[in-house]
Structures are given as C-alpha cells and as structure tokens.
Image 1 (cartoon, rainbow, N blue to C red):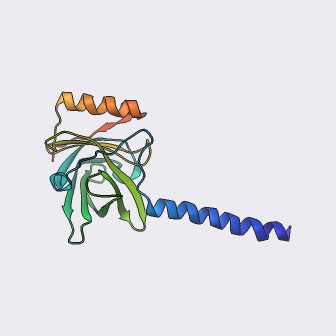
Image 2 (image 1 turned 30 degrees about the horizontal axis):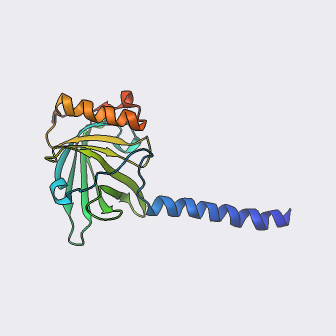
Image 3 (image 1 turned 180 degrees about the vertical axis):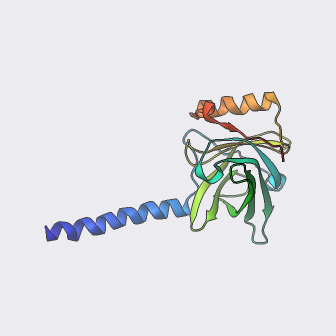
Length: 181
C-alpha cells in the first residue's frame, strides 16, 4: 500500500500540473474552426458591441456589453469589457490582456483576465470592413457575435450562424444581447 501511494501521488500531481500548465499557457481554438488569416490587427482595435453569446458565469445577467481593444506599448492588446448587470442593477468592468499565439496576421489569440490562466480568443469570420466579427473560444461553450454598432444586418447574422452551426455550435442557445443603456 505504501508503494502505491509513492507512485500514485506523484503521478496524480504530474497530471494535474500538465492540465494547469496547458490551461495557463495556451489559447486553443474550437475543433473545426479556423482563425482568420491576413488579419489586420490595427483595424480590429476599438469598440465592439456584443450582439450574441452563450451564457456563462462571467457574463451572467449582462446586457449592454461592449469590448474595447487597444494596443499596449509592449504589443499586447488591452481588453476592456463592460456590461450592465440587470439583476444587480450595476455596471461591471473587467480588464484583461490578449496576445497573438503566432503572429499578428493570424486572428488566433489568447486572452487572460486572471493571470496566469489564458483562454482562446479566435476571430473565425470577419467582414472586409472590420464591422462584424464571429469569435470562437477554445471549446463549443464559447462563441460571440460582435459588431461595431449595437445591431447587425440579417445577412451577416445568418452568415455567422451558418458557419457556427457547421462547426458544431448549438446556435439555438445563443443569448441575444440587449443594448438599451
């Protein structure tokens, strides 16, 4: 029994360490999704309105959600997310950092609001004028539709929904964000 503990505990700690290291360092992409190439990072900077998302705890009960991206002096991107919690009746803000996984011409990034934990942030579709974007996380639990204004044309909405469905997203579960404040 003592020998089993001598082996099981270090092996378990090693596996746990690999899981933590992987979650802390990688910015994955949903299987079947491809990040936009020939990406223009400078055109992507600025304010985006969240049009739709899946419900998850960090944005629970949030409307009027925006994300503003600005370049930091070191080349990373400051992520400033704001939204109104309509249950608590208060504005919330979260500041994070995004980094390109490879280079700035591929829209595959990792983002962190709680270092050293990083998550995938991947622009998988964008219009040529950088007015509308479809963003995938590192699993089928995370998807966002973004716009430079608080609305989106039906043709772009349908394009993004069809793409998301082909990848395997359950688009019927999307929350369509209100912008009324």
